[in-house]
Length: 225
Image 1: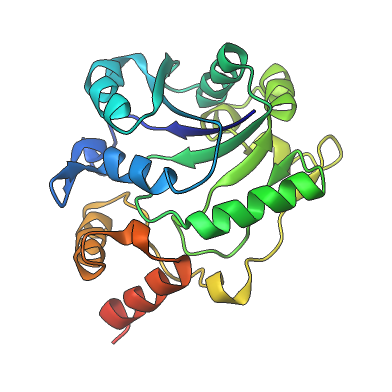
Image 2: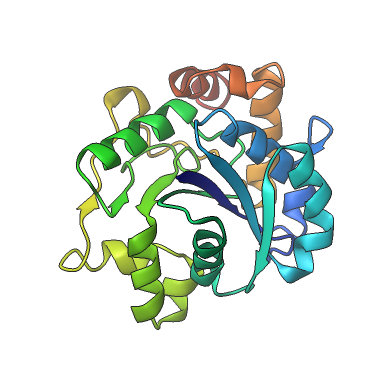
């Protein structure tokens, strides 16, 4: 079973409450789930800390996501709770900052991960905020047993790609059509949010209708004049 597991929380140091900030009338986390619904998967899960559960539960249900609560800072363990509960074989990892995830890039990297039997796969040099990671559940469970640094547990995958002697790592450069590392479409600051709102409007408030290459072109039209 392949599951999209989205990690999200309400509190944020740089942009407080950003998960509930509105993009065209809906919370940011809802817009992220809408983007992820364009990626084929057997199951979709919103994995959040306990203090976000009551706010996120109705939003997850509306987007057809399961919801699971776990440790706030130990996000790696949050993923492992989902793996154990739902008997997941492969995780497509996504974060709640990214309403413009490229579904076509996600499908591509996940297919490539399966074809080379990678424990971890992710494109390098995508626009910041456009990508997901494809990770085997067995690798995440092993990482959870061995990773001890707070950074490794909060950010989920560094223990894997920093230990290529232990895991099969696949990190190719993004294809030319998506290779734009200088573009930033994540939402982490007020400036990011303002930019995202403008890009959302420019995409007719329906960014999920567009391929990644089109989103890049629209971004360039607006911000690189």
